[in-house]
Image (cartoon, rainbow, N blue to C red; front, side, top):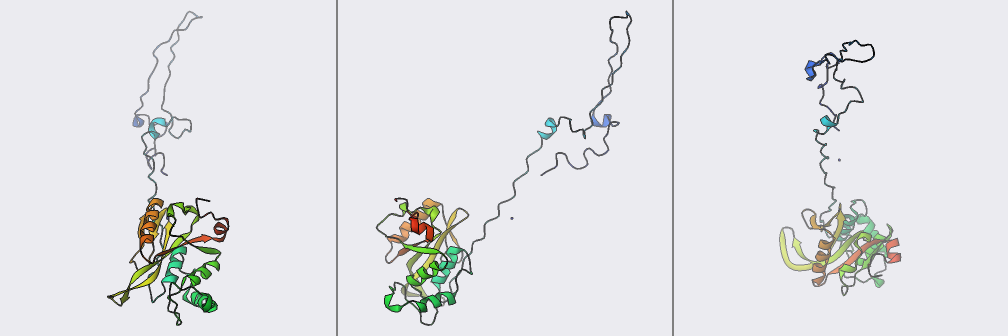
Length: 255
């Protein structure tokens, strides 16, 4: 998502007989006297231009004037961005972090929710008995485990500078968000899941309520973004990491 060393047709029809076409003229050495026999003998020599098709011909002067081929234009990497529908922000956040619309489905999350025992659940994010969404952190953690990943809850008393970003697949934040009723913005807030991850060396805010992915920038920029989010009231951060990274705690830089 080469260029020939000579333009096509430049040398066509220019062989050894087309000397003047190539700017070459015949020349002679008029006389050269040699010793030994006491007599001189005229030696005529003729210089001719080399055949350009000769592989031994020096092409350095010609090739030096050729400009190098331009690199192909960079094609932006496609970014998967699942937009909000119903109250399925947990589903959207998961699929956006994995950059795969088939990673999880509503049925998958609903099955996980029904399998979990309500008596053991901590519910910072309300659940929906109808399967319309509002899945809590336990559903997200169980869903990640089905794909060999873990959700690491981030202690807000620590600075995000101690996160080893290269070992983190993505981030899921739980933040307060304005409640809408169709096009109307209601004076109410509910907790909302949103995903953040790196694509092609750039971190993106993949909040499903955005019209399109919002570039955050380089690692320093995403750390600043996370700090700002965590300063807000009722904001929580989950690090999405592989089971191996979690087992060896390599998502942290401070050991």
